[in-house]
Every structure is written in structure tokens, then in C-alpha cells.
Length: 76
Image (cartoon, one colour):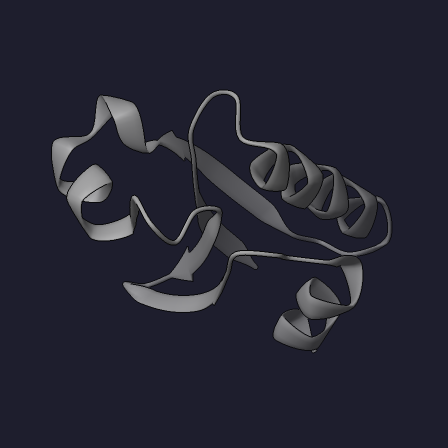
């Protein structure tokens, strides 16, 4: 399963969400592309108040506080 992961520098929630993605990836076949919203004007406008955001095929799956269980629920 592949996601787009929207984030920005100096974002504690983003760092925690990425840690959770890495933990899930140890046991499940997931991949993600990290997109810095500060380098993408369209993404910045769309997600600046929501990050971190997990998206797949243009659909937001989860945003804000993304935990281990949240990711497991998405992939199952």
C-alpha cells in the first residue's frame, strides 16, 4: 500500500506520525512519499491547517494526530 504523506519542517505531530509509519512498515508492506507542503504551493494551500496528512489516490485518509492504530485501521 502506498501513501502520500504531507508534512513540513519543525512539526512535532508530523515527526510523530512518520515514526508511526516506520513502526507499521516494520511488519506491513507500506510505502509513502513525503511531501513538504512548504515546497508545494498547491499542497500548502490545501493542507496547511491539517498536517500531517495521509492521502491515497487524492483522498485524505487521516490527518492531524496520526497514531499506530490509525495506520493499521487504514491498511486493513
